[in-house]
Length: 317
Ligand SMILES: C[S@@+](CC[C@H](N)C(=O)[O-])C[C@H]1O[C@@H](n2cnc3c(N)ncnc32)[C@H](O)[C@@H]1O
Image 1: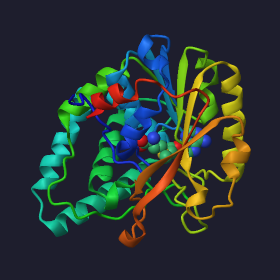
Image 2 (image 1 turned 90 degrees about the vertical axis):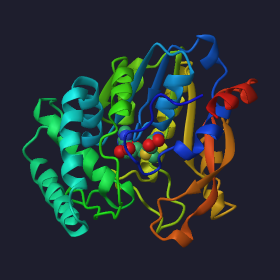
Image 3 (image 1 turned 135 degrees about the vertical axis):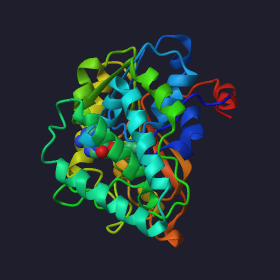
Image 4 (image 1 turned 60 degrees about the horizontal axis):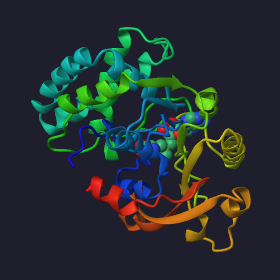
């Protein structure tokens, strides 16, 4: 089956590559109509959200993230997709008409403007000004190095220019299809706990937090100014237990510390009583290509495995 829509951003830790494995571990109740609401509190690029939205019958969706620009982008696509497409086409035409060196200059001009305007725009108050900011955000994501979103300690986007020959800056069909989906979606800027009041036993919650670093140097945690340290991992575990008591189906991704240290039982200890599965993933966030490759990742869940794995996997292909 051909996907109708896909993530409109490249996002660190994006789950595009893992969709098939994740699909194998989704709750059986997703298919019978029992689960009515899908909740993803660390939405990022939303690969799992978009997969579930097009292959399962869900009545409504809740997404959130701590990154204000990311949430602004989802809101713009929900509310003003036509205007956004027009702006993105203008940017795309201009950018693609430039030579390499001029493209680099243009990229840094937009980056500077984007960082300066952060002080001027109230990112929590959606206004018409937000459309231009979202266009800049998508442009930077499509043309920066590795499609990363990373900010420095002052909150300024600091990823350098990426050398793509022919980047798609405006994928009109996809943006419009995503906009349709977002009409049925509650979009919140905030902490992962914000979803609590939307969770009941008919909800399925997928958590994809910033990963617990595998080593002291592997700490890509700066999606936003707030870092996600060990204390945050434990705060998330406590929240997982609260939602479990509400009867919701829960699935959580994280890195597998046993890739580095077979004796590191952090997840076995902290998620005792839940099911911990290991799946193979390719990591490509590392800028050093020699440090990329296949490693295990964890899927932690509070329900039994589905019995229809084969059938659903077929749908993904
Ligand atoms: C691993 S990424 C999610 C990737 C996503 N599943 C995808 O497919 O692109 C983690 C996300 O968590 C967000 N985040 C970090 N701390 C958070 C918090 N306390 N509450 C909500 N979101 C948070 C980051 O901004 C980032 O977008």
